[in-house]
Image (cartoon, rainbow, N blue to C red; front, side):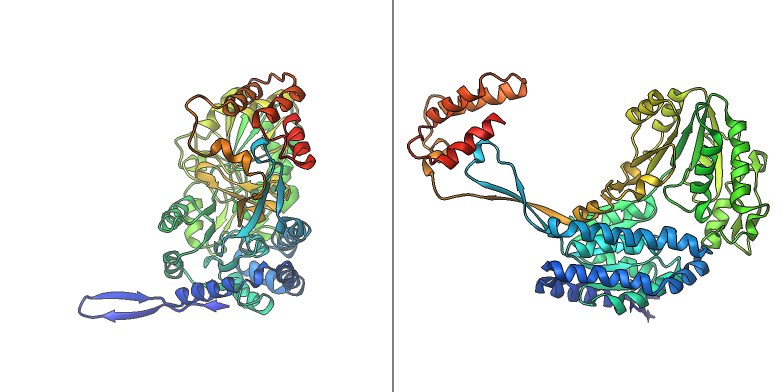
Length: 523
């Protein structure tokens, strides 16, 4: 890959280290030249890049699985299901949509633009910076890259340095399959990221923590660069007594403990309605046993914490008095067992930050109204989950909470639906991607009006000098708009005829224009 090297020069007179990183600037300038050449305007070139990316997936399964085992101890099946297949699905969906997306979209004309052609043209922003996360380090690097390339952008991809094995693998594989004119991979840590953020990009896509998201947003503001920020937050699950708790437990336990709880969409805490806490805890214990056995540390399907720093952070959130299941950990192995905690106070440290680990706090609430109030008193989460068989309960939660997305009676699955946008709101993020929405994210929707030079008399109403009295045409259009606003129809066919007379252009119009005006007004 394109690996930058920070050269440190010791300046003895100032007793400081000056870090000079120049390769990032060259990477961006080279990509600008490539973008200006216009090769990615071609449908065929974009499709070829996507097919090459798909080839990368097919030919390097073992290398990808091996790297992710070393970084996060992910099993092969977990890697294939949750890191590789979603990228392949994104490629397939976008290739189906791309031809139509690249063509101008004709827009229905309003009355005053009947003689004009209205279009939306999707054009690439230019140079895109993708800063990916460490928890699903292959998926979260490659999936946004698919949308950015398909939209016609050149890209700088910066994998997370916290997952070094897969970052190196990505850096080695991308240049072998994708055109180096269009995509550059930069590996490194904070100095490299800082240097990249000094450069001018046309779009920045970031996945990670809220604190770093603020730094990204501040850097983007220097050039008014648009951004997508996909962060996280404390995603709640509301569970009521109408549920089949064994089903609920299976789905929550899967979503919570996959990747050892290091999933931005995972259930951060459960709000138990109507005193079902103990029943749900027992069901969760059974699900954990079924998934990972008596000793999850020996299960090949149970992951590890990414590094010692995060291990220390997560274990400090555990209060022994709150443990009802699990609570075991092994620092040398970076292992923390699936852990359930109850009798949690809102003042406990575990409720003050996103857990991002295999700890599941459970809080009792009296009813769904209290649960909604609890959620609304906190920052808007990336996802919210509600488990209930009661439509009234489900509707109440959906109508009275705000979150990036919602899955009802399951967890995480809304993010797998490629027809739905995926993203956050408030502190959990801004912007969205996924399938066709990825193409929209990485494209500027350019509004185009293509006018004719005929029928100039139609424009007399807008040219000065203006009459001293109110123009009949203006008064007529105002009256028509008021009727539309007030949803009172009147005789549309009669008023269309009146409009033509008022314009005084009957002698100038051919049948096609006349028909278009009448049809537009009737609609």
